[in-house]
Length: 155
Image (cartoon, rainbow, N blue to C red):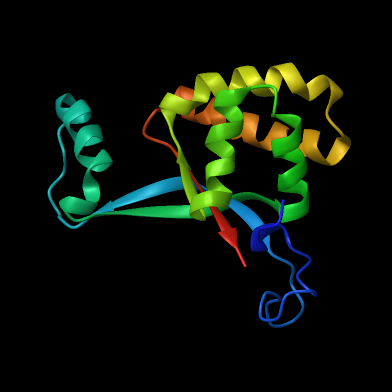
């Protein structure tokens, strides 16, 4: 590909960060949500709370993320190449390169997990390691749908 996201950072002026760090892809996992209120929320209102948290930016909820896994854009390119046979998984993850950022939530867990299971046995070691980390994060999302991932391209 010929986009800046795939360029050699040394060959494009201004693409290399201070200190010589190459562009990378980082996936952050939601690990907390903070409400701008002090009242406790009753247990029987849990689904309402989840809905409110999902639309939280409009009602004063802040998402708190922690880095879950990362790779260079070169490894991410190989991940995408490995997933080319699964159109839905490839389209979802390649959105990160088009838009600079993607979210992965419960609606993406099943198709991404299926694609990973298909390609993991024959994936190169670095791609397999990255896909395994994604699979673990997707498993956490399946167990708790309020969790989601935010993938970002850092240049």
